[in-house]
Length: 355
Ligand SMILES: [Zn+2]
Image (cartoon, rainbow, N blue to C red; front, side):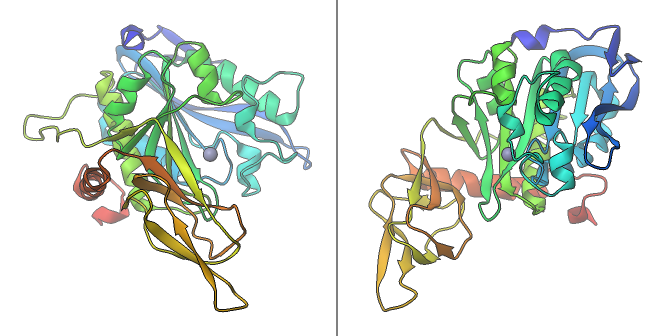
């Protein structure tokens, strides 16, 4: 990909601080102030390899209640492999600092930061924050990975979304080697859309749900980021004793929600990662005041990549997010193999799984 050829600058200046090749440090970007009159800061971890290579941004908590990505970045910046980094890594654990402080997906004025890019110096707090992030971080990066989760009570299976028109994005998405890759256009005002308009591949990782830490999702995301960095030459390839496993990605360009046919009490019949057939009953919604109930039927064949964990649902609520797959059983097998790999592969220094 073209970004692969980009070479690191002699001096990389972020927030007025210059970093030479081989330097590491943290820059605290001022992003405005809240009701306490204090200046908010967005910490940016800067890792510059001694040898040249691409510049990648890895960021999380663009939605302030999405925690898994914060932990993925914490483990990434502790990762011993960064000693052999080529090029530059810009790691931003919490982009939407004001939303994170209030444990909220949204900014204090209830806007969605991921609709405000590229932002503006004269706009709302979120628009100003977006502008700082674009100018000081995204502008330096040749590619990136934006880490998200599902909403509260809506866990997602680990998955990568990429925009088909972005050069190099498909290759980077497959190199991440997640269980599921979804080709989808980026919405207007998102960070991913800004990157693509500048011909920079950007992946959106989704895994788990808001306000919960899922160590399996964290492991899957960390492995993916490391895989992607390897694929563009930022980290060394695995040694010959650790042969790459065959590609087990489920690839799709079409997903759909199965919605509640009736309000009531949901009894799900499937789990994340499970195969479903067209016409299959995948849950029931019972009448809380009487003996009746309604079947929830999948209108397509595929695998479950997101679902609600809410028990009480209104008519029309999204219950199961299905990624369409021609061979759902094979897709389910691939997802299971990936989940097994994510648990045993690649130990991390302070990972609770390796204690
Ligand atoms: Zn999000």
